[in-house]
Length: 325
Image (tube, rainbow, N blue to C red; front, side):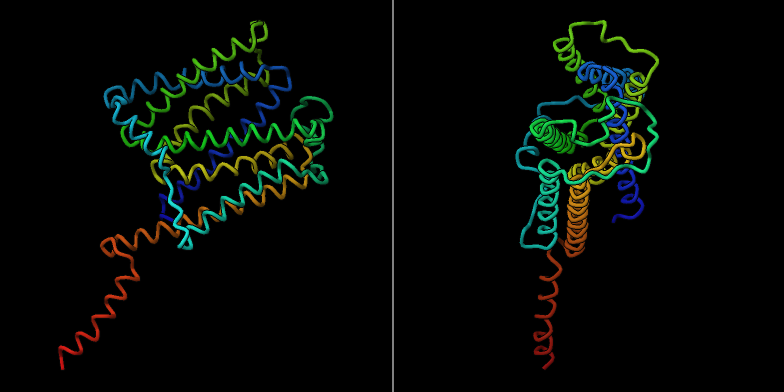
């Protein structure tokens, strides 16, 4: 698995997904208390930018390379042709395809099948949020709303995957910290424009000393600032596909945390989807690990497959015997 460095990468992606799960829970509580979602996104990115800008300029100002047209072209080519090869004639290629299909099946089950509800053992909620029916899973939403929500989340994860792939070639030529800071700063400006268009009543932008403020600080400092940098580090160590395929863990952790912290019920469909997503993630990582071992073997053999070298070695045996005769 790559020794100590591999263990750190696995630990990093698990921690990143736990961070995101915590953000989802706290965001849900803040939004249920009446906060506008577009305003929340603006505050989240602005908080992260205010934390990162002084740190980035203090530590990276002299070391940062400008983003040239060459780097931008490199990003485009990587995004166009992809960062991952399937190699369907090999076992690791089939494992990765099977893993992706399992993840697709998990999303499909989550969207179209609910099944019976399993209530949480925790009947004492940490936060009173929303209506009393909010713990009933998708029961408070129409089927169309539920499917549309799954569609938006799927689209969000596709775009997040594309973003992850683009980071691979980018961090080879630029500072990870400065890259994170610039992206978050640009996102803050974009979020402000959208928030102003969506919410013209600035009295609703006010925040008090409540869970909304805690959610903004947590999401901005821990998730947007810290976890973005951790994602850059993970991409540099193990590649963008490794990070992207850990996204299903966020759903699993969110279901577990919301059940115990908020007392929300869990549907059978969510459990089945979680099993499929974990199985898909395991298959992809298993395939990636096998591919990495094959690549290491090929490098040790001077770039030639180990089986080819073995065949040539066996072919030399009769020749050596004939020469002795």
